Length: 597
Image: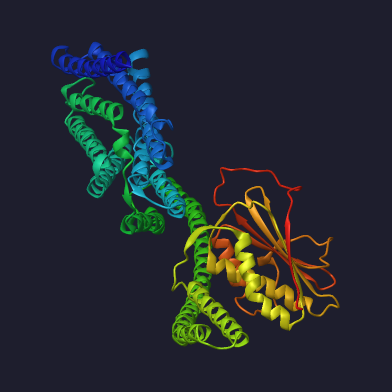
């Protein structure tokens, strides 16, 4: 890698040395070689080699590896196109002076190539590659660029071509060409000044270098035209030294531009885009005045006036079509923006409704939490009095009733604690629990209710179940609620039985709550997909139960048979998942039965 970097640096040094040698050779030839054919040939060859090197330096910047951004790559493609036009013009000039050994004809049809070589460069600046724009702005910018490009071509054809083809007039041709080309160079310099002022970091440095090279080139052209007017200019004279220097400067700029620094760009400023759009509109608006001027100019031949009027009309048709396309595109974008605004407004209204609903739920939660705190105070007193009655000298039957009252009061207080947890006012206490123990506690609490309803229950508890990580109070009341649901639906049957079974399946401990005749054809499905309307809720709602189990890493499944039976399955993950055991189908179970008798 170090050898490659060293070789690259050596090539760069050779590049700079070669450019310097060519500039020095031109300066030496202009000062040493007398005016004549030899000086012309040497000067044309040096200019051709310099332009070839400069054009070759611009070419790698057009590749995606050097310019990953599309707009940056388009910038370099346009700059490379301008250099290709310039190189083509120089090749045409060399053809006459070097190979044919004759003066370049005047008027020269190849002058249009020289005029056009600045148009892609102006278009490259009009792309504003140093700014961040969305796709819609880029499409509008392309149409604006097309308007300006057509206007520049129209300006050249309108000013120069009539004196070259329609009515040949060498002085008029030279005067109009020089004026048009000078205007084009001034526009390029003004554009470079503007983008240099608005750019930053690497783009500003690049624009500043292009501004310096273009200013040197424009000044050399002005000086050469002044020398031509005074009949002191000839090919290879000292007036060509600034031109050679500007070519070498462009070659250095394209070769050593820092692409990482060009990756930083700032937000698009609407003012620049507005001015480019206004220039395009102004170009179209100027066409009728060109046509009017063509008809009112008294010194022009009739053929020239008719040519210019027809050209103005054709340009108005073409640019008008582009303007129609631009306005159509703007109309489509406006309709899209209006549709997006309408959807955003509807989304905002929906969000506002959700916020109002959330505020109502928050207020309800605060109300429930406050009520639960208030209920806790009398419950504490009731537990104290029931404990005093249990420890007094009451008959055994009355002490048993006092103990039952204390148990129900404690159950009620546990329910209140669950309410506080539900409204997020009491934190859940997670610990490793035995599901069988929680179920046994739940059924002892539910036994008086089942006794009143004359329902039987049957527990089939799996042996050696792994512990689950859960909150005991929350899990207890989930089991109480689901068992109560089954008991409530089962009491309508002739032989009502609440059947509860626990087992270990892979990473989960499952608990089934069914009646004694569950449906074998209907599969379990997630509780969220089934409406729980019509199901009585003695404690927590099914939605709250599902939320609690989901927070524990499990889920609740439900089975609804065509006969109207409801069955629930609770799946809870084991506390230690590193212990993986297969489904225990043949593990002996212990059955605990209870009855209302």
